[in-house]
Image (tube, rainbow over all chains, first blue to last red; front, side, top):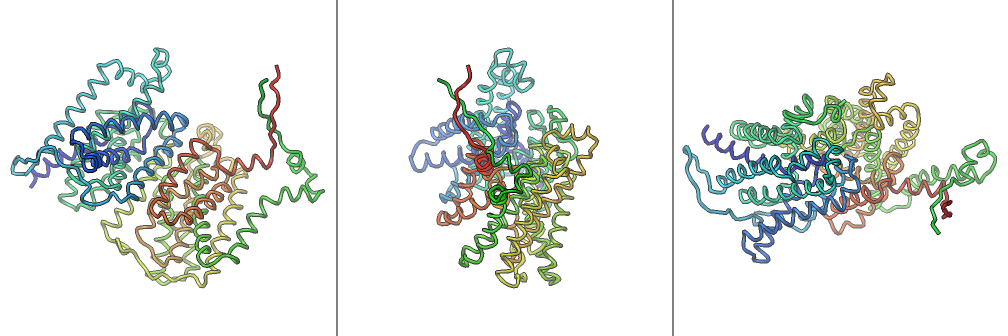
Length: 290
Length: 334
């Protein structure tokens, strides 16, 4: 029982880290809190579903297309909408939230709700680890998640584009004097965030089913993890997702499944109360509270 | 030949700013029309509407109140994404009083407005120091959390809610009560925001640090603004409880957060009149679009994005400008 809970808590933590990493990337680099993040997540899943079931494309191909599509849409979101309200944080929030609402509620209206809306697992197999059934999808998820996070770290620390990302995040004006185009970087940051949401969706959705409500849940989870870890800090995100991941699984196992989301939200509330910059936040204190 | 657009105050606008306004009917009319016309429309309209459109007017007034409450908070620098918190608090307060103790609606309404406002203020008090997007995140999360809490603990009727509240005596009492409250809130709080007190609130949004350095305790002012707007929201919620004769988890629904915000932004934030105007446009529009059902929220989303990006000043400011100023193309001086 305990081993099982711990194994599933680890898996849950990786799931949380995956859902939050895109949101955190966008916020950390461009300062845009993309409240449409959950919508991109759900959109990617529905796109894959539609391509495999309606257009009869092969599964890997439709996954690739929907990830690329979401990335492109993220870039368009910045170029067409966000660039006009750049710098006005609350307008950005309202605009992205509005777009997220449009996407999610459109799917709900079109009737994309039900158990048939699910994606197949990549490899149908399961193992027994320490007396607990663990299916192949979850193991793949942990593996891919780890690879993704390591490669993201390598990207931001050892490629020129990644260094430009961090440059803009640290000091926009100084970065401008080095010839880094802030708008281009912000476009890429929003696009990559959306792309990471799509990757997370293709990995995680096969474990459950797709529904518009999932979009709101994912947004809240991403917010929770990013706020607790410190918006913009990758190490913080990983630590925070383990904290929440374990807390969620243990409340689920020992208190009741109704309480998992409450634990999430209460922890956001507490962290914002005590230390709004999060556990590892690098944002300046005066910008978030006074 | 290059031209530029020149905007000048109308002569009548300049004259009505002064004592001359008292000397001519035309100037008096110019001043009074924008205030009297909406007042008259709201008071006379209920007499001519059918039962269905009376209900629409009722929800216009309720969402108008919520939009005003959003706008007061926004003018103080607190952008809320969860107006449903106030609405739900008021609804549950009056619902519980009426359901468990059988107190008459005329007592539960004011009491719920005050207590609902107080509880919401106390809930948000710890995060009052947060600014901008961080405050918005908390307001987004709180109503969602309360829904799950009610679901998990099954208190107050749990997922099924409480029903069988006492309705208000007649449809006329309902209508004139809510329309009267809307008008009182609109004109009263507009006056408040134009006074010195309102100036402090607006100052907090513009530059909180300079308000602090003027020796003003901004947390106390922010708490007051929060209480005022939470009470307005709670009153709207308490009222709806007695209209629907039901209170349950839907009172924390996203509709009550998104619609007021959309109304205030479409109408024009920062004037309260804009918020009311926005509600008067969006609610009847959504009734006309009732056939499309769930697509309504989609439309609100589209409206939100369009107005934030293309016309951030909103409709009211646009009309206000046209009413007071004229525009003409003039040659650019060399």
